Structures are given as structure tokens and as C-alpha cells.
Image (tube, rainbow, N blue to C red; front, side, top):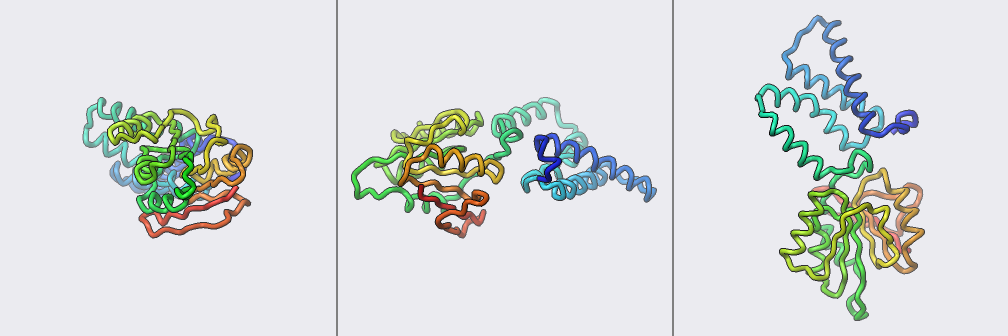
Amino acid sequence: MHTLLARFPPSVVALVLQLIAFLLALLGMSIANFSPDPLSFALLCGFTAAILSHLAGLARWWLLIQLLFVPTLVLMLKLNVPSGVYLAAFLVMLAVYWSTFRSQVPLYLSSKRVWKTLEELLPSSASGKRFNFMDIGSGMGGVLTHLSTERPDGNFYGVENAPLPYLLSRLRIRLGNHANCHVQWGSLWTCNLAPYDVVFAYLSPVPMEQLWRKVKQEMRPGTLFISNSFAVPESPPQYSISLDDLHHSTLHIWHM
């Protein structure tokens, strides 16, 4: 994001850009002496907001939100959707994206190819020693439950601060009887990384620099830090593994 705009939370910037897009759309209609139907006007606002957001340097996932925000409102009003649906949708979104606007870390789910590749990066079972794995931002627990099944000689931990993914991961662990798998609700920033042999993150570009400082301060020599798709600025990994999955994931790996 540009330096001037970086002083403000992305949610505030996005809202301001929506207002600017609305005004620009009105101005364009006035100049062209054109009166479109509400949905066409909403689409014009959405496209304008998405373009402005791109120029402002907002993260890519914001562009889709900006594009669809006004058209979605118009469609909902046109369909005369009951007000209770709005409330329910808001509560679900709140439960899933609890602190996304503040942390700028949306819910990303790792692919099964990532799960399988992580298996190969875990400490060797030949040593006979148990190891500790931490998934910071563990989402719905897919990584943890898969690895805990494949590697019963490890202890698998996760931290998640969005209520619904956290509850679903707890349910997944309980129903799957993953005794060596544990998830806590909280912030990754309050989680001490010192006890873990492998730390895995799939966050966003925004917190990577701060996370790297935390990793260097807390992780022990000989441990492994793995980031899915998002690199650390000015701190290249020892090596990376590109995967042929839907997200074109790349695992960036640092030996501490």
C-alpha cells in the first residue's frame, strides 16, 4: 500500500475508495447524460472501486470485495431478502473473519498437496524422539489432523483466533480422535514458538516481516520455519518447493 494510505487501516481505505468510486460513477453519468439501471450503476461502482483499490496497493483479496460490495447490496435489495438473512450472514462472516480487517490475514486453506509435502519436511521418525509441530493460523485444522494421522510420533498444535474455524477444528479433532492434536483459540503473537521443532504459517504478505522477527527471537537453532506462499521481505528462504495445486502454492523453508 502507498505510504500515505498505509497510515490507515485497509478497511478504512477500502471504504473511502468505495465512496470515491460512487462519486466518480455519478460524475461520469452526469457528464455522459446517461441513466443506467441500479444494477448497472452498482457494477460501474464496483469496477471503479476495484481499479482504485489496485492503484492504491490494497491486497488482491480486497479487490474482489471492492468489486462485489455494491452489486451485492443492490441484488439483495432487489430480491427483497428478509432482514434476518442479513444478520445471519453478518454473524457468519464475523465468526469466520473475526479479525481480518485488523490483522489483514484472511482465512486461507492449504491444499492436500501442501499437507503431503509437509509430511516429508517433518523430522525423521528414525530418531525415535517425539517432535512438536505448530500451525499458526490453523484455520479448520486440516493440516493438523492430516499430519497427526500420518505421524503419530509427533505432537501437533495450532492457534486460531477466528471463532468458527476454531470451533470446527476442535470438532474435527474430537470426532477424528486425534489424541496428539491440540488447538487453542488466541493470537499467534502471544504464542511462544520456542517449544516447537517445526512452525508452519499460511497467513498473508502483511505480517510476514513482523512474524520473521518473532521467529528469529523465539525459535531454537536446528528448527524449521515454513511459510506457505508468502515470503519474508529481504530474508530469502534457504529453499522453496513449488507445488502443482489449485493455488500454485510455494513452500518457503528456513532452517533456524
